[in-house]
Every structure is written in C-alpha cells, then in structure tokens.
Length: 263
Image (tube, rainbow, N blue to C red; front, side, top):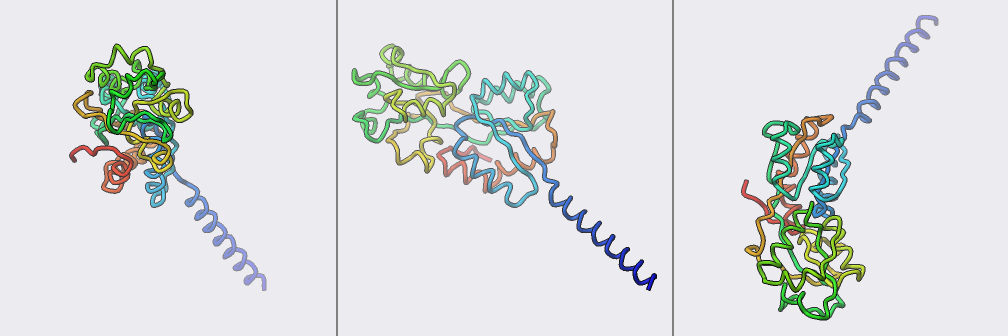
C-alpha cells in the first residue's frame, strides 16, 4: 500500500509539473511595441489582429506624428518598431546607429485627399483643391507641417495649385493628420487635406466626401519603417516587420487606401 501511495504521489507531481509547464508556455507571449504614423490608425488594427492570431506575439501600438516620434526615439523612447510616414526619419535613425543594420523598409506610399463632411455644400468632387478658396470656406485643417509629413505635403499641394496665399490664412493645424481629420469631422474646420488611408476606413468613409489630390501636386510620401536597435525582442520585432511586408499585410494596407511599393 505504501508503495502504491508513493507511486501515485509521484505521478501526480509529474502531471502537475507538466500542466504547470504547459500553462507557463501558453502564457509566454512576446510583445512588440510599435510607434506608428497617424495615417495607420485605421489599418493597423486589422494588421495586428491578423498578425497576432497565428503567432505568440502581442502588439502594442501608439499613434502620432512621425516627427514627434523621431524626437522621442532620439531621447530613448521604448519602442521596438517605428512605422514612419516620412522616409527621412528612419534613415536618420539608421545613420545614428539607433536602428538595426539593414532593418529599414518601405511599406507603403501615402496619398492626399481633400475631405468634407457629407452634409457640406463644398463641391470637392468637381473643384478639388480650388474649392478651398471659396469665401464660404473659413477653416481648412491640415497636419502641422513642422513635424508631420502629410502637413508638408498639403502645403506643397496648395502651392502647386497656386492657392497658398488665399488658403494660408484659413489653415488650422492638427498635431497629426488624424487630428486634422477630426477637426473637419466635428465642424471645427470646413474641410481637411488629409491621408486617404484615414478617410477610406469603414468607420469614416460614409461620414464624408473626398477627392484625391493629384499625385504630382506634392512630393512622394514614401512611408518607411525601421526595427530599432534597442528592441526588447528583436526576433519578434522582425516577425512583425515581415508580416507588414507580406502578401497579407500588403493586402490590408491596400484595402485602406495605401499605394503599395514594388517589392
């Protein structure tokens, strides 16, 4: 009886250890911390959901202007991957030794649109940028050009259309391109020049009307990402980068209005 009891105890202990090990393995999920440009606000939720569903990796994402993130990263902000709307910031991080060698990549080409609320009387479909010069348009929202690439592109587009002098007094600046769209959505601005990826999102596209700004009106918005040198889990960070560049990741970005770069 003593031997039987001892055997049962040992077996139970082994089984318990095995179960505990299984629980520990299941719970051990890596986390990738991503700093993402604001125009990714809509698309990234789908990217992350698809990525994490089949991998033991969670993704924590923060959205903001690319210039602001760049300044934070120079000061040691704890991110693993940076998805910028401006190609120059990842290049500078690489040059400063703050990114993994060969870890930068182009993931999308951004496009500008002129957006107005659905009930607006502004005829952007036929007039495009020229509609913004009308006396009835009091405020036009754009991202702050000092640190947001979409803001700089909007300023360039207005100059291309010879509207900069007439529209400049009407400009109101959002901290980033998502906030610029919010100004127009809430009525704080009559129109906005923003990223197509934001207005093409399912949650927004039925709330307004928009028209593409001609691609030749502003410098190419090459959106580049980088895996950072201080990444807590470089393997997980690279796995996320690889998914963004995969067929599934590219399909999601295209669905949200981005132009895809050549592979």
